[in-house]
Length: 416
Image: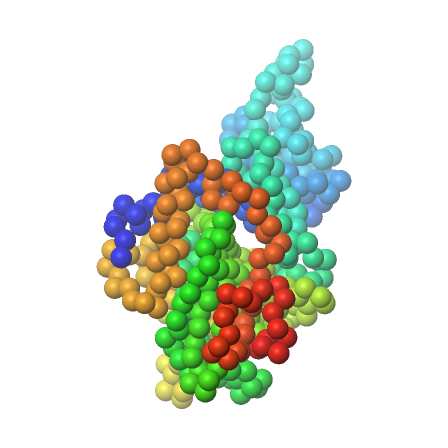
């Protein structure tokens, strides 16, 4: 269990909070690219307890500003988007896509140019990759190297991006994504159906995996090893990248999956889904993160929250459905939100199945405290090839040493 101080350190993310300042030093997915149209409506974006606007300018470039106009703080989500700039509808101040104030019609004509040159606009570096606009909110100038994961290098037709807005802290969403022991319990109904349809090893044969780890400059590589009691092992090799990436082991026929929970503020988070094939286009209609809701900006919409008990169906439970929840992702959303907006981790009783969570928490607490002492954010003080990070699922003999398997080039006969 954690102390109250440690719990607060991990979940408080606003300006000035140690975790918030730490996270600002990393590139963050902010908005789906296709939700921004040239000269279209600016989009409000809330990240780490602060409000921003993103917009696509006339020439296709993306601007990312503080939401409040630098004049009187009126929301720039109301602004006119034209001529590669936002123009505030209150007094007509015009800010070009680079963040430069170019018109201040509320000032006397003879001093407009001089006055505009003195106005500071908080705007932020952006990158577009994987159908996503990424933003850097930190203090480094220039911004650090971009996180060039494999999915950030792919053609747009090989990557699908969707989001789920959850009423819980980012850490609750993150811990759900890295908790392998719940796989054969919470998701048992869906796993049994998948095993019946595909013949893949059934993880529910053993709900108490053994964990092993390889520490990395960016986090760690985890192996969840399930003895299937027939001389073979179901091996799921995950990558955890500080501060908020989980590369999820999937069956080889399924799209690759990376999950990324980003804090909206202390009590709300947005869980990003990056689903992709490395060698072929995706059928986006078949992606599991869009099964229940067709709004890619909130796949949790319509699933119900605590007031609706997440639309749980008790009749289905009596008929054999384990959780009574609509889908695999609905199960994850429910258990992330169920402890309340901020879970009280001082009351937990953790066991060996929670070793990954314990490791991640300790790693993150140390990384944040090191950052407070002036050290570079974890993974940014060394040359890391983010493009080599990949998860994989294997079905292997017990004699295999998983540490000798390269997730980018595993033996094909072992792939599930």
